[in-house]
Length: 76
Image 1: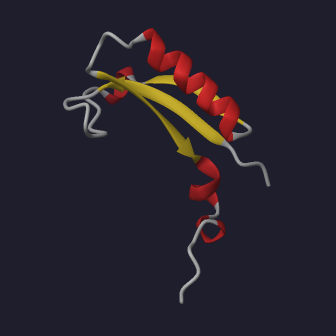
Image 2: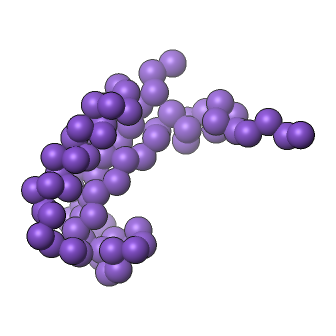
Image 3: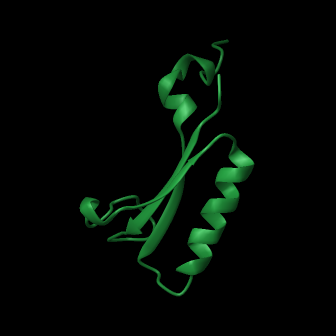
């Protein structure tokens, strides 16, 4: 299975949270086949908006959402 990653961002109310102000204005950077390429895209998007403290970009591990059992911690 591919370990897909989604990179997106937008304006947030508080940079310490993920409360996006306007979901209609979310910027979708793309879906990437691995974390290194997603991180590269995330860094580029974040760098573009580095002077705007209300803009935030994130990497979402889509493979963890599609198959949560793969990332579950074993119980001891």
